[in-house]
Image (cartoon, rainbow, N blue to C red; front, side, top):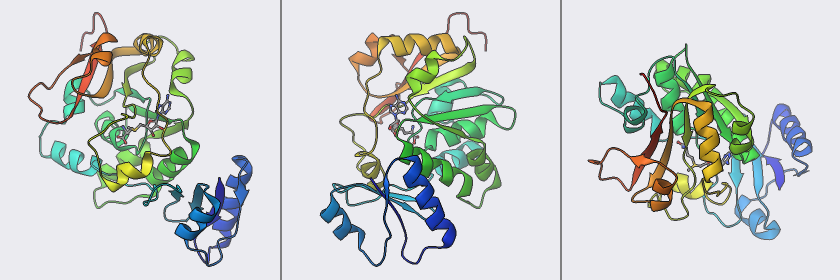
Length: 263
Ligand SMILES: C[S@@+](CC[C@H](N)C(=O)[O-])C[C@H]1O[C@@H](n2cnc3c(N)ncnc32)[C@H](O)[C@@H]1O
């Protein structure tokens, strides 16, 4: 892993890049006038680029770098503002004040939508295993500006943690969150957007296991929800049932409600 900056960086950017190189036990290299494509071909290493507006993560096997973009979350929130239902929020019956653990932060899109609904009284914690993705998304959530203050506030409220979610869940008290949400990487996906292609080589691919679901059910007060390709027998075998049967999309939300859930 190489940590660098844009061409003609500021002093702060250089200091941040040097700090990250140390923290991640990576090498800091000056950018000079090098083209990223040429640099990636020569080194065959990932390059993390510090930029005061938005950091980027390059992979030698991928044309597009990974960077923060709120993706569909902006459209989803605008639709909700018009009174249209959001499939994730509808599935979990999410409400203002809810406390959610998003175990697979990724781009942070679902966390933003959940945070918008949770509002100031609620809380969304998103965890990402890849430290570089985590840093880029954390920075983006704090810096990205849209012309919609409720959206900006929802982004700012998401608390980002770096680490292994299943380990985190084992350390949490019973019923400490209302919802636990999983959106693991699918090995095969119909999403061919450049944004999704850019995360693929960096993301963690781990299947949801019975023990992880058991822990999530212990930690959740209301339900555990998973985004999954559909149909998916291995997810159903874990106890999830699929909702939104009218949906024609290639994925669905699987849910396990906690026994005795009241609201
Ligand atoms: C499909 S993406 C999630 C997309 C996200 N729901 C969104 O709306 O942007 C899955 C992400 O979860 C991360 N991940 C997978 N397993 C994880 C784990 N056990 N702990 C923490 N992060 C994990 C991957 O590295 C990847 O970035």
